[in-house]
Length: 93
Image (cartoon, rainbow, N blue to C red; front, side, top):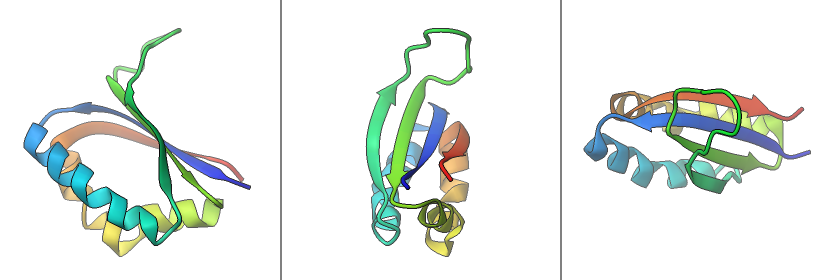
């Protein structure tokens, strides 16, 4: 069953965001992950406080969590955190 990682974020450093965005796709490939959608989030009800959203899809929950906790992705976390305020959520069983 597919699993999804949703990322709500607001950019805070354009240069760090570009660096992070350029590096993430290579980390996804090993775990068969891909971008489903990325862009500005239009709030229909409530306010999350974030401007943008990304939805990643993986074939399984194990691959999704494997990607997030992988050494390759974890090396990008300091760049990510310097480039954006974010919230990550896993959906799927």
